[in-house]
Length: 96
Image (tube, rainbow, N blue to C red; front, top):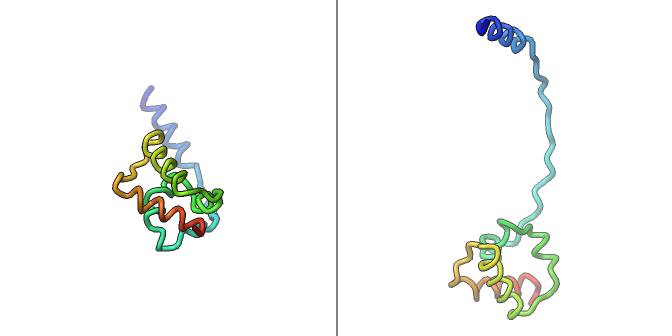
C-alpha cells in the first residue's frame, strides 16, 4: 500500500510544471554619507536612513538619553565608549 501511494505521489509530481516569473524589487533607499559610518553601524540595523533623517532636531542631552535608552531598553549593541562620538554624529546628521 505504501509503495502504491509513493508511486502515485511520484506520478503527480512528474506532472507539475513551474513557470519562471521575474520579480522586480524596489531600489534600495540611499544610505547615509560615509562620514556617518558610526550611525550606520549602530542605528540602521533597526532604523532606516530615512527614519533617522526625519527626526526632529534634538539636543546633545536628548540624543545622549536616546542612545542610553536604545542600549538599556532595546538591547542595542552600542559600545559605551562610542556614546560621545555617536551623539556628535547624530547631532551633525541633523545639521547641528
